[in-house]
Length: 154
Image (tube, rainbow, N blue to C red; front, top):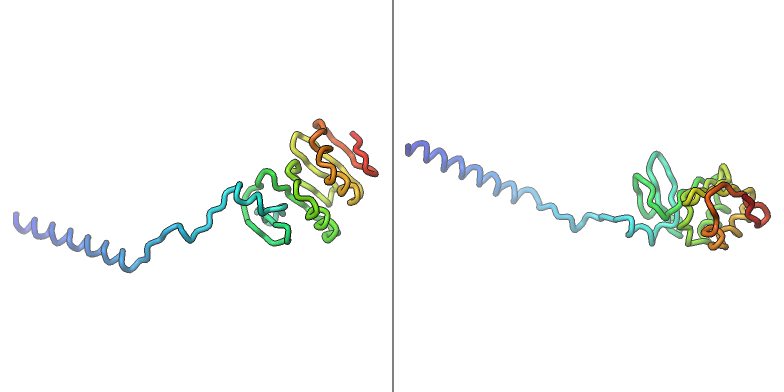
């Protein structure tokens, strides 16, 4: 009986010593250094997003990548640029309130908005008119529209 008790105490001592030595060798991991951002934390900083390799890169006003995420965040439009990258970026960066827009496709010259609104444009100048008039986007009914010479046609 004493032999079993001594082996039990020896096993417990070795286990305790093993755990104690691990706690000294391995540094404690805390989450203070980790950065956890939620969607509400990203929205004030992100202006638009670009999809590359099934990931979304969120850019700020200075064209710097602010955040990388696997899905699109509502309220931040996805942009597909064409060959005229400088002019398209100038147009997007001049307008901060693009909350109604899901996606701007400069290659196909289409804008997809919430409430099933699709807007087709032909000139970049028409976009300046469209983004300058925020009330126009909120007053549209679901459907397909075309912007020609600063006029919206259904």
